Length: 184
Ligand SMILES: [Zn+2]
Image (tube, rainbow, N blue to C red; front, side, top):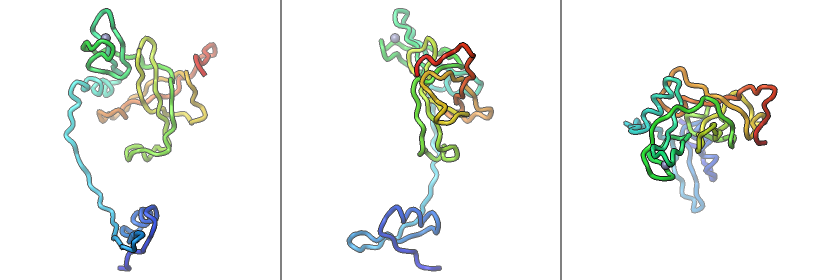
């Protein structure tokens, strides 16, 4: 087996271990460190606790938000919360519309392992009629240049749910001829 190749730039070390499994990193003092890949996997036993109804909803094609239980407040959350941020009262579950509009969005050119296959991908903050806060979701079936603030979007649900936020995403909703972007 040939000796690992030497590099002085860590970026080159990373490329080398991706390719050949090992490299020697030579620092400014001339110290040579053997660098290898050491993958590991951790399975967390994770409880969704009071958020459980949200993920159970996604698995059955229902998008749930929450609503403040205090009559004089009644704030509606697009990202569910156990307690109201305005008045501190407990909230109750509600079903959100499956259609909304793009409030803001970004295109991610880097992503975690779960998203590498679809990188670059689009993330959007979606707003709903009658709802006071936004929902952060992936936006699919459109390119970066097609997205605009106020674009009507509708929900899609993962047919094989994994009880994860990736069980839902939004796609552009074909606008009726009379509809115009609310903002732009
Ligand atoms: Zn409240």
